[in-house]
Amino acid sequence: MSFSNKLITWYLHNKREMPWRNTKDPYKIWLSEIILQQTRVAQGLPYYIAFTEAFPTVQDLAASSEEKVLKLWQGLGYYSRGRNLHTSAQMIVNEFKGIFPSTYKEIIKLKGVGDYTASAIASISFNEPTAVVDGNVYRVLSRIYGIDTPINSTNGTKEFKALAQKLIDKDCPADFNQAIMEFGAIQCKPQNPYCLHCVFNDRCIALQKNIINELPVKIKKTKIRHRYLNYIVLQSNNNTIIKQRTGKGIWQGLYEFPCIETEKSIERLDKNHLSKMDLGEINPDLLDICDITIYNEKPIIHKLSHQHLHTTFWIAETLSILETGVSFDHLKKFPVPVLIANFIKQWRGK
Image (cartoon, rainbow, N blue to C red):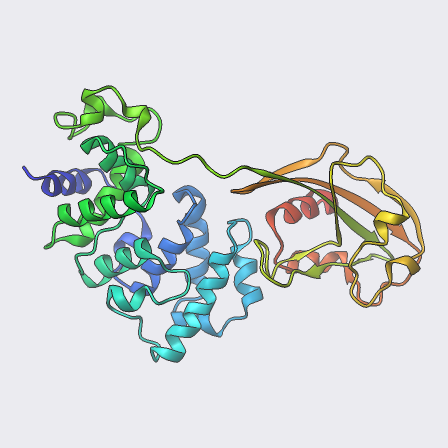
């Protein structure tokens, strides 16, 4: 039996039931693929359901505000995915007249859509035989075929794409692509794969050479950067100040408390620190702060792909009237990083 036939047979007997596997709607396939980038299925499923309920069609998503999209995205991380989702929805409505593009070459033009996502949508929704290559596929192919080319190298990207394209079942590309992803997710797992009960254990080179844990090969990641953030939570008559992040960055478009970055964790804030707060039209030097206390004595470490944020929250009581302030009760309406959301929930007890 060929590789593709054996793989698809395994899939049809072992696949998990997912709502996006019961549709060919490219909009919903696209939503699922974007949400599941860098995200486990268990975490992404509630977001998929929430998005399809809030935005049943691509027109609904395009008509929404970016702020509403980011609020719904809150907690998923990699917020550029949410922003790109919104931008691409508007592109589909404005440039494609509301009709989702139907070929790989057109789909990949959407912002935030790369080779993997375009291949998934084109194959699942339009039966185009374009192979997907993601982390699961790299793992499956590198082990079964004994490939040690680094998966995050230019040569590796080309080699694995070519192999996947050679193996794909051109008559059933949707089943093949979903099968190889599913196989990597629940059978050929990163740790402790089920080799004894694997349908490919008679041909798996990694199993034969006992190098399962050595594949796939990946070039060492870039050095982790450590940053020390101090969020100042101002309090004045049940009001505080929260600002939207502008410019490029991981949390672009989200809201946060005024922040002061230091070279290392600090045990106290002084006037020199507070004078560096960005409060918009408010001059921080004119704030009448009567008391400031540390909320979490041990910094909260929030880990991102290439940086670790050592975060401390400070509660600052001020006698000044915050003209541009936001009431505490309205804080939950703003899209914020999960780091801020967790603090607000714990601080306000809601």
